[in-house]
Image 1 (tube, rainbow, N blue to C red):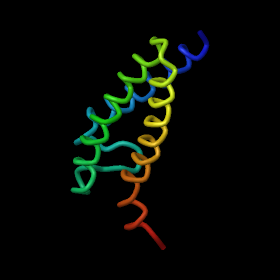
Image 2 (cartoon, rainbow, N blue to C red):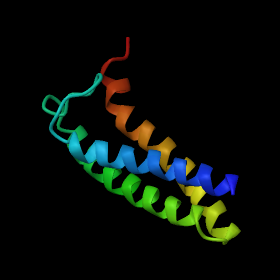
Image 3 (cartoon, rainbow, N blue to C red):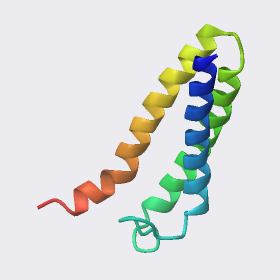
Length: 98
C-alpha cells in the first residue's frame, strides 16, 4: 500500500513538472528565459510531453499489482528526470561558464 502511495506521489510530481514545462514554453521562470534563448522552447515542449507521459504511466503503475511495471517506471522516471535536468541546463552551463 505504501509503495502505491509513493509511486502515485512520484507520478504527480512528474505530471506537475510536465504540465509546468508545457505552460512555460514562452514565459521566463527562475534563470530560464525562453524569449532570449531559442534553444529552450523546444526543450520545454519535448520534456514537458515526456514528463507528462511518465507521470501518467507512473500513477497507473502505482495502482496496478505489477511489480515489473512499477520497477520499469521507477527506472524510466529517474533516468528521464536526470536527462531533463541536464538537457535544460546544458545551454545555461555552456554560456555562463567562467
